[in-house]
Image 1 (tube, one colour):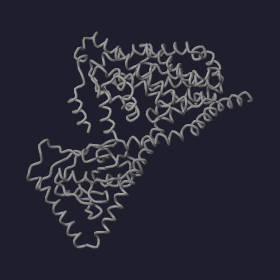
Image 2 (tube, chains in turn purple, yellow):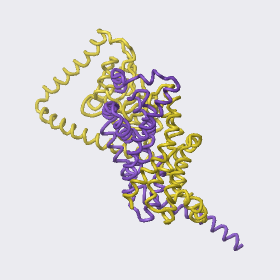
Image 3 (cartoon, helix red, strand yellow):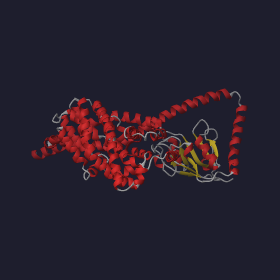
Image 4 (cartoon, chains in turn green, brown):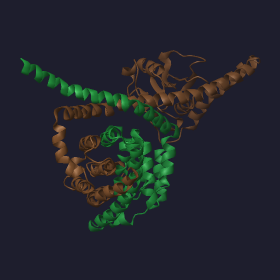
Length: 194
Length: 336
């Protein structure tokens, strides 16, 4: 009987421990998350999609903007997965690089702006919780995660751009390689959006 | 009198629709239940269809004669009441169905976030001239009515100006509150649908690992990989292998689990704290590799772009993933 009782309490203990962890998440993470996400959601609604779209369409010419500001704005305002739609502002040849740069920012952004990818928060939180437990400052980690993320998405954009040029050439997609941003086409897309 | 149809699509952040509004002789009215006169959306629907537009606060019409209702409801009351009565409902505030009447708020009867630009004639041709005249006449008569009213009630003029001011202030305040309210509703929605389920999963996992002592076993396996920068670079290369990365990607689940395990080791001091930053990038090398064709399609890429772009991204990761860990390692000196 004693053995059975021990087994039962060990079994319950497993989930009690799980419940305690869940409760610490609920009191430690959720309240901040609710207030922060609500405020940012409201801000995004106040600014409006049209305004962001119009601004983003202007950022496509220079590589440094294309692989930093464009994905950052896309991720912040349109969140996962609608952030990839900003790829339509770019000529075909840059689209894979933009995607790579955009998707690579979806985790670094969550430390500071969890609304952008709330379903995948734990990629950050799993490590950040341990970091906090060891006495670290989570805000500092979040900030550095985002900053190094920006450097990395820029480099990743450039590298993937080179790789896509190579594959376009190898597969004989000269049409895509020679295509430049057609300003009229962009205007048309914008008009359709509006 | 002949009527034409309009198609009304949802606006920014809106929901539902598209609705087609066609007034008939039995149902000639578009009502504006917005307070402060006739809403531009209602006016535009009336202009395009030839329907009569009325301010429901000033002169209500029977619901049997109403073909569509334009509302500006950020809550749940009006948004549900009109669909419940079977009246096509156009909400100028972007909301999603909620509240006690939410079961009546369906896509074929309700559309939200609508502005005048979202109202389009279903006919490609311009509206015939005679129809335009028809449209113009009720408007003119209404303006005349208004003018008469004002003339009759000269004392009311000052009062109405004050009322209009109050109305304007109220509208701004209402917009502000509505936007925030909807933002809060969206937040709770993603929290319940996206965040809490994952939290339950991770919490249970962590509980079991801590309580059962599996953690110590895992620490022995993980610490050679996660406990130093060389191990993290190797981990990132493994995650970025073009045959593995599309399998490891979905929903960041594997990244989250490995991250939680490494987090545990950092928490207990086995893995040094400053490695948290490079570790974040090491577990993330495969991010989005499962989603490339979908993501590119969302960016309106051509099939050829996807064919060449997919291997480009997968191979680029093999270089940029370890590089990312090293860059993060550089940044991690700021953490020490």
